[in-house]
Image 1: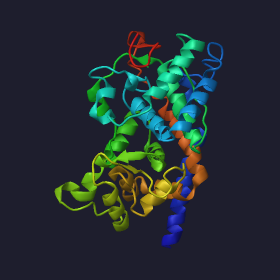
Image 2: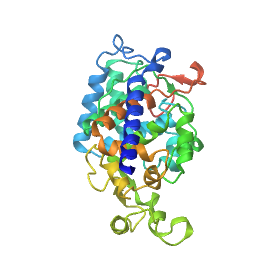
Image 3: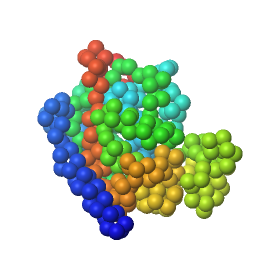
Length: 326
């Protein structure tokens, strides 16, 4: 009976996933973004971005997850407005939460080339969104069409970067954050799957290894063998460790399988499998690679559409240089 009940739960989860995928574009009718936005003004845009991303990834493949993370950090604060790229004292980029972000130079390189071909036309926000898509595809992830027409924000505040999850929040906190951005529990679980590639600083997880909640003991939810591995890898806070210890360079569902084996690197990763609101989705994706890929594309599309509708023309523009306002 227990097995039958588990199978029924999986079927219900699959139905929910497919419903969201199929109906995921409903909000597009009122969307100011458009797939044809640059067809007339900058028809070579996607070709330029694709070429530059592949050129840089050929020299440094770790830039792929870095671009995905940079895009997420941008969209969670003030919407997808490239405010994370502004490089001045007191900006999001200068915040402690942003100190390990990478990929800025690649975006600058793309922007410089785009300005040569289509001056004063393409926003840095659109470039970052498309670059994150191309980086995902380059490492074996799904393709999705990117709608364009985002504007670049003129405001960037370091304190607001604290809204971005850092790996030690409660699941309730994450759900509430995602809901405030128009995303749901399904989006939370599937976008967390981006941790199938990339690295984390040891500084962000040492408390789990040596002094969990002030006990001077490790987090009991970590598999003992995995704990030993992490303690060897993270003797120093300045070191880095792969988010997925099994297939760190493959965009696959191993991340979810790791959670089932108590091998989630970040506390927020592992809690996805222990929380009743998200555990069934973890199990579903662990056994359904095609569904994960399909839903990842749908959720990334939603992420890229987050806009700060309080921003008016006075607070947005098409930046000529992604690092500073015009």
